[in-house]
Image (cartoon, rainbow, N blue to C red; front, side, top):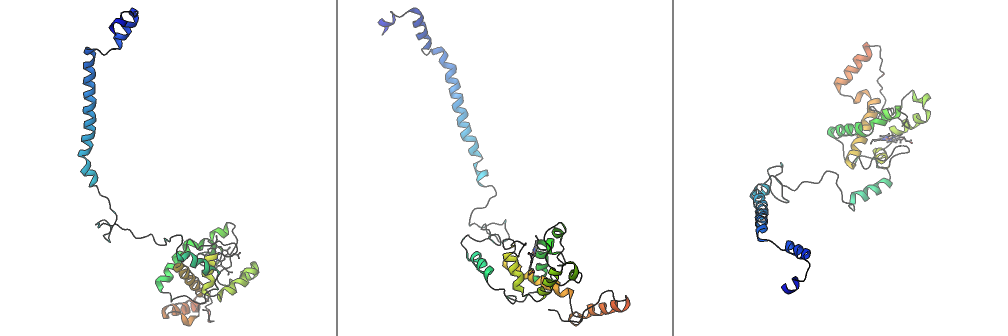
Length: 249
Ligand code: HEC
C-alpha cells in the first residue's frame, strides 16, 4: 500500500490524509455523541415518569363500574329511536304506511300524552297548520300551500270552498288518518316519519282531536267551573261567543 502511495501526486495524498479520521478531532465528536445519547435516554425516561398519571386519568373503560353516570355503569344506553339498519321497526313502519287507517287509538291517551302531543305538534306541525290548527301557520303566510283547518272555519266557506269541504270531512276522520299523514306525508306535505316516532304520532293525533273538540265543545261535556264561566260570559257580554250545544267527538 504505502509503496503505491509514494507514486501518487502530492495533492492527492493531501486529500487522502484529510479524509482520514484524526485523533484530535475525534474528541469533540465523541462528546456530542454522548450528549445525544444522554438526551435520547432522558427523552425515554422522563415521559415515562408521567405514565401513571396518564394511565389513571379520568376515563371510562367499557363494561366497567363508574360513579360518573347515575346508573353506575360505563355502558351507555342507546339514544332513543336508535335502530339497526335491518331492524324490524323500519319495515313495520313501511308496511304500516300502506295499511288501512287505524280506526282508533292503540291505547287510551292520558293527559300527559296529550301534553306531549301538544308540544310535538307545536314543534313539527304548527309552522304550517297553525298553533290552533286553523291551517294558517307562518310557512303558509309566507307562501306554502294552505292545508285545510282541522275543523270547519266559517269564512273558508267563501274564501277557500275546497278546503272548507275537507275541513268538514276531517271532523269525522279516524285517528289513523292523522297518523298516516305523518308517516306518508299528504299531497304537498312531506313525510314526518323520520322525525316523529310512532308513539308521538298517536299523541299528536290525540292533540289534533283536542283542537277539534275545543272548536265545537258541547257545553254539557265541559267541567262545571268552565261551564258556569261561559254561561256567565254569554249572559253578560252580549254573547260574543256562541257556545254550541251540538255533539262533537
Ligand atoms: C311544511 C308545511 C306542513 C307541515 C310542517 C305539516 N303539514 Fe300537514 N299538511 C300540509 C299541507 C299543505 C297539507 C295539504 C296538502 C294537500 O292537500 O296537498 C297538509 C295535510 C295534512 C293532513 C291531511 C288533511 C286532509 O285533508 O286529510 C293532515 C292530517 C296533516 N297535514 C297533519 C300534519 C301533522 C300531524 C303535522 C305535524 C307532524 C303536519 N301535518 C305538518 C302542510 C304541512
